[in-house]
Image (cartoon, rainbow, N blue to C red; front, side):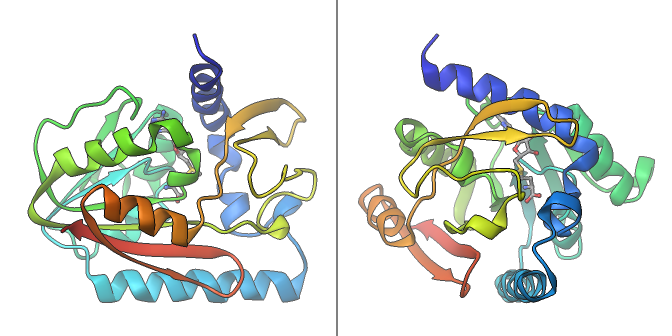
Length: 233
Ligand SMILES: C[S@@+](CC[C@H](N)C(=O)[O-])C[C@H]1O[C@@H](n2cnc3c(N)ncnc32)[C@H](O)[C@@H]1O
């Protein structure tokens, strides 16, 4: 087993254990509360991304990768004709399903490790939020090949992720430099996990994706996020 395999396993375990406290990060609560000014900036930038997603208008058969607790699934649901959500954690999918209406949630949930998963059909839109930074550098190309395989002709991709910024994480987490490829994360009870965290730079990502045959446009919010749209060139 390589060190990247170990990180991937630990990352899966971390998000399974964190399911019940995951939203505190997005909602800037507890250890993720960085004060009114930074919190207001965070929410304004989330709104900027949400508006860009609205303008992109995810449509047709939509696939969400690493769908988590549904913070973005609930937005996709409003325009998707069908919605499939893949994540390695049944625990986060339980939260996701509850958020989207419980047993009647209009979502096909699939539990799978995305580094082993193969799509069984193609989709008009593929979406992933705060997932790319958890894809190790040496697996980035094969991850985008997977996206390509899952994309229907003329299909579109939308993604969003974190820029390198200390206040995006918990007060008791330490980033390990913009070029580090892993971080230590803690749960509220103090349990520690080592996971993948790559702060892909929008310029580098654009160069790579272009070289792999994608047409891509990536934007940044002032402090916290980058988001992009991609189609096959
Ligand atoms: C940072 S969260 C993002 C969740 C959601 N997209 C959001 O924006 O709130 C990362 C997600 O990736 C999932 N995950 C971690 N490793 C995975 C893997 N190998 N395959 C599939 N999902 C994975 C976790 O369970 C978690 O839900």
